[in-house]
Image (tube, helix red, strand yellow):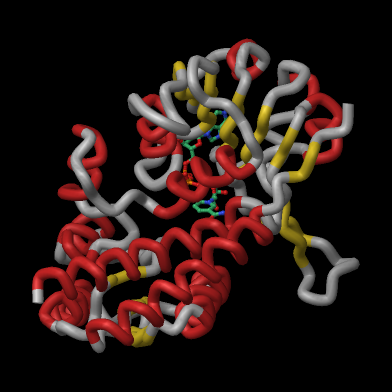
Length: 296
Ligand code: NAP
C-alpha cells in the first residue's frame, strides 16, 4: 500500500481564499479590517521565520498585522505592557505572542495577560476551559487545523480509535479533546500517549488514526502502524544537513518512508499541518473582528 499524501498546502490555499473573500466583505460592510498584533521577544531563528510567515499570510488575506519586536532582555514587565496596549487597541482583534519565550519569562503569566476575546491562539485559561466544557471559543490553531485536515482527507473519526502521541497544552491535549467531542468530525475513542507510556507501539498499532506530536524524529515508524491507518504528523524537527544550503532540513515525528507503506494517508512535513496552523490563526482573527463588528 502507498499512502495518499494529505496536502495541507492545497487545503490551506482553499480556506485562505475563503478567508480573504470574507475579510473584504467584512471591511466593505463595516469598515473593520481584521488586525493581528504579533509580539516576538528575542531573535530565535525558528520564531523569526514563523512570525514572518504569519505576517505575510495576514497581508495576503487582506488583514493588517502589527509587528512588535522586543529584545530578549526586555523583561516580563515590558512584555506585559505591550500585551495590555494591544488588549486596549480597538484596531487589533487578535494577539499572538510567539512561543517559546527566552529564558526568564513566565509563559503562563504572559498568555494569561492576553484578553480572552483577542486570544486567537486559543491558549488562555479562559479559552482552554471553554473548549474543555464545550462552550463557544477560539479553538487552538494546530489542533483545529488537524481536524480540518482529517475532514479534507475523508478520514472518518466517528467511532474510530485515535491515538495522540504527546500531551502538551498546545497540541496533544487539545487535539485529543477535539477528537473526543460529540459531533461531526469527532466522536472518536481517544488514547493519549506520552513518555510515561510503556511500549508506544502497542497503542499505535491499535489506532485507526495516529496524531504524532512528540517533537522527536522517527517516533513513529511503519511497523508501529495498523495497515490503513490515517497519520497526521505534527512534528517539526530541524535536522542538521550539510547537503542543504541552509545547513538543515525539516523532518516530522514520523518516518515518512516506512509509514507511507502502511498508512492509507499521511501528512508530509513540511506542507501538512504547518500551513494549516497559520490558516486557522487567520480564521480566528477574522472571527474575532466579525464579533467586534457585531458588538459595535
Ligand atoms: P512538547 O511540548 O515538547 O510536547 C511533546 C509531547 O510529546 C510531550 O507530552 C511528551 O511527553 C511527548 N513525547 C515526547 N517523546 C515521546 C515519545 N518518545 N513517546 C511518547 N511521547 C513522547 O511539544 P509540542 O509543543 O506539543 O509540539 C510537538 C511537536 O509539534 C514539535 O515538533 C513542535 O515543533 C511541533 N509543532 C508543530 C506545529 C505546526 O504548526 N506544524 C505547531 C505546534 C507544534 P511528556 O509529557 O511525558 O514529556
